[in-house]
Amino acid sequence: MAMLEVNGLNVYYGLIHALHDVSFHVNEGEVVALIGANGAGKTTILHTVSGLLGAKSGSVVFEGKDITKKPGHSIVKLGMGHVPEGRRVFPGLTVAENLRMGAFTRPKGEIAASLNEVYEWFPRLEERKNQPAGTLSGGEQQMLAMGRAMMSKPRILLLDEPSMGLSPLFVGEIFKIIEKVSAAGTTVLLVEQNAKKALSIADRAYVLETGNIIKEGVAADLLNDDAIKKAYLGE
Amino acid sequence: MLNYLITGISLGSIYAIIALGYTMVYGIAKMLNFAHGDVIMVGGYMCFCATTYMGWHPLLGVLLAMAVCTVLGIVIERLAYKPLRSAPSLAVLITAIGVSYFLQNAALLIWTSNPKSFSPIVGRGAVQFGDLQITHVTLVTIAACVVIMAALTLFTGKTKLGTAMRAVSEDKGAAQLMGINVNTTISMAFAIGSALAAIAGVLLCSAYPMLVPTTGSMPGIKAFTAAVFGGIGSIPGAMLGGILLGIIETFCRAYISMELSDGIVFGVLILVLLVKPAGLLGKQTREKV
Image 1: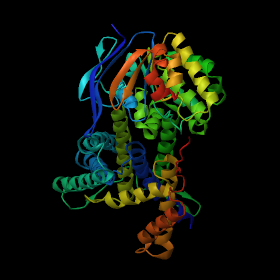
Image 2: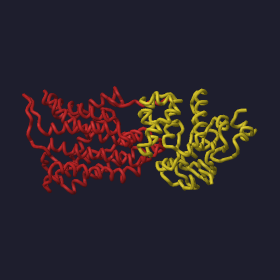
Image 3: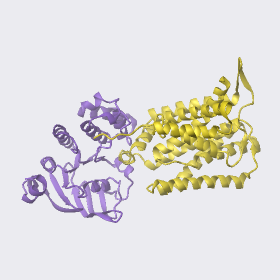
Image 4: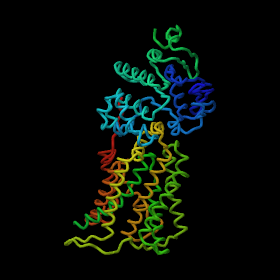
């Protein structure tokens, strides 16, 4: 059975039908990308999976447990980390406090070790650990948001537009980190507008258009698919 | 002169303790809890009942008032405000005014409109420093204010729950993604704010020992002014705003006019907000891309 299974998800914002019967799955150890244009429903999917939004119908099953109706704050404990769109670090909290909040659900004794691990991944964060997160650059904030999610020791990491608004240099760095996270054994569900980058590191991908999944397949095949090339890769 | 200053600081300390309640709730729930002033009144009556009717030790009376107000704060939030979490802020504001009237009228039914004379929790004695005479009530009030300020600063700055509270006040969605239960955190802010209101109620009634169902309204509004004055959402701001307001009010009463003092206090608020719209210590928020 897949690690994360989403079946026939329908989500509404008021009267707007944002997701139409969306179904997909993520196997353990995979990197799966959701690609699509602005407003296709990528972020809505992630918000529904991690419990920030409620679904009208359909189900989200994580490691055999139905989490569709679970409140958002209780899903972290099950092993799901979510790096939201726009990073959403706590600007008035210091870098270290942000990271500690990431480990909110974990016992106190384990936090110091995880903190060191995250500092090893992102040495820049250690340099700036006592600085308010709001004073970091965009790229550093993205690192902080990822480090903060890793503090909960997730088995699956949901990444929402990690490259948004970053310089090309930082984009490369962030994608290298995603590959490292995956190599270290964390399953990744990645939402990206930068389809080329996303497909280059993903195992499989789903293509979304106005709330519907219109295509799915092995990432390498999608990279060579003419229709995809035309619509999303700008070739 | 110095006597007025001490009186002002003491009155300001009470405003500051009330303002802390406003500011904590505003910081987290982004709402103005206009029923906060009436929780003060309930605290006063609870302490009054415990000491006068049941003959309890004043300290037990304070504890009873704090316990009752904490529960009351949580219940008010759950019943009146939680269902409106995603409603427009005007709806929440009007509900808060409704809760305020409800509490005042409930008090009217239970305790009638006859003023109760509150027996101060500490003796009426005073300490003499040369020309300066400071009553015990004043000393206790200022000490309570300092202790509360220090405790709250430590709590929000150093503890895990306190940091979580700040995280919720900055971004509820992201806080939820950390596994923080936002509803529990909001309840906690109401609980702390209401317990502080109980303490403020007892101190207020000890300094001005006349208890009626509307006792809390005016200090409530003034403390709200103090919270805005200092920068709503900021804990040191509430403290600074409260104490400054107390001093300004006392000096106006002493040197300008009894009748005009309230007007002058609110006038100062308007002036400060014209120059610094976020209040003295308020944060101007900026977004970084």
